[in-house]
Structures are given as C-alpha cells and as structure tokens.
Length: 178
Image (tube, rainbow, N blue to C red):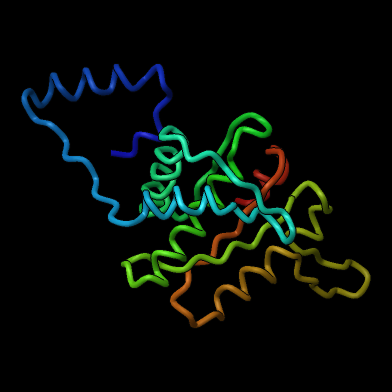
C-alpha cells in the first residue's frame, strides 16, 4: 500500500474501510532488508545535499519511515513530487535515500546505485529549462532538462538517475512539463 499518498487525517479512514472490506486480514510489513540501517547510517555520517553541503541528520524513526515511504513510491512511480514546508527535510530525505541505496548496492545488497541531477527550475527561464525555437534562425536550442535527459538516456550503467527539481513549485513550469 502506498501510504505516503494519504494525508494523516485520511489514514484512519483508509484503514477503517479496508478492515470493513477485508475483516481479519492484516497486511504484512515490508521487509526492506539492509536499507533502514543504511538510511540511519547515512544520516549519522552526513547527507550530502550538494558539493560542500553535507549535513548530519538525526535518524529519528519518523524520518527513516518517511524515507522508506519515499523508496516505496520510487519503486512504483516514474515521477514523484515531494512537497512540504521550507526546511522540512525534503531534500535531505531524497539524498539520504539515494546515498543509502548506493551504499547497499556497494555492499552487495539488491539495490541500485543512484545518481541525482539537481536543478532549481525557477532559477532559469522556461526556454533555458526546456529549450526554445529561434524565430530568426529557425534553429532549436536544447534546454538544460533536454540535455540532462539525453545524458541519462545514453548512460549504459545500471544506475538509477533522478532528475531533482529542487525549488518552489510553480504552475508555469509544472504546466510546461506536459
């Protein structure tokens, strides 16, 4: 069950409905193997958010649980949006997960290495982000996103590539994603 898709208020309602539909059935707990410990270890060692920006994060059970929920979402979705208040740990959770998955992979566990490509979509113009057509020369210029997609597509390694738009959500650039 993808519990991260529910709000805190909706969880009791969801569990009530499912217990009415399936009385006596209990969902098994997911076994994430070495991942929870790897997440906690990465938090204690320091989560590398950007070059020169490594922060130690207190691996409280609530944080580790949210990172595991993010992992469950990444397994079944091609795109995930993590929303929350400024400085609430969204970026730290994403990077903690990627580092933990990479460490698990290096230790022979069945997880993929992760490479994160981070950008703030509000820091550049729409044409620079997606690409644009020059009316004078009739030439197309690729944007940063197109170049990153192409780079990730041509990578033959088994690594996962996450394109992280780390910044405020804006209706214009979200709309242009379609």
